[in-house]
Length: 206
Image (cartoon, helix red, strand yellow):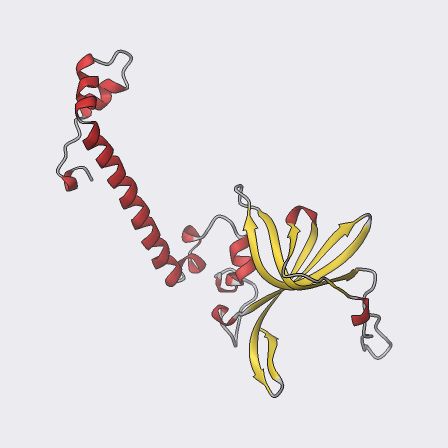
């Protein structure tokens, strides 16, 4: 990199800097060339940042991270929340009719325990935040509603489910933020919108 910008790195000076007793001439050399050293480091950071950005675009555009684990984000939540795990070679579930790019909505059912009672929250995924250690921090839902988990639909002898829609409590607001630490489990449904006689209808990808 130094040769590309017409500079030369003296390894003797570098080794003397990290020695127990560096020479005074070494510090003088560093001081006299401080602008060149600063320019070299800035160019190195700039080159690394730009090349890293474009390599990321190449990997993502060619879906290499889905096909090869070595290119994959260390945080698996991105692939779960976006539905990209369908393209993993080891995935036990695959899309036969649709593609990952057909996913337009992610519908989430989340169980949260409040005061000893379990509640089912559901809604459409809007956004999510990841922790610095690779875990999931929060999820944001829109069109959210909740009900007690105990208010499940009953099933009669013929296998028909009863309507329990009146058990749901709509949560008025733009988004509902739920902390992952408060969740017991999550269920995901990946949907695409299809044109019907009465407008657009969601359908689970297949």
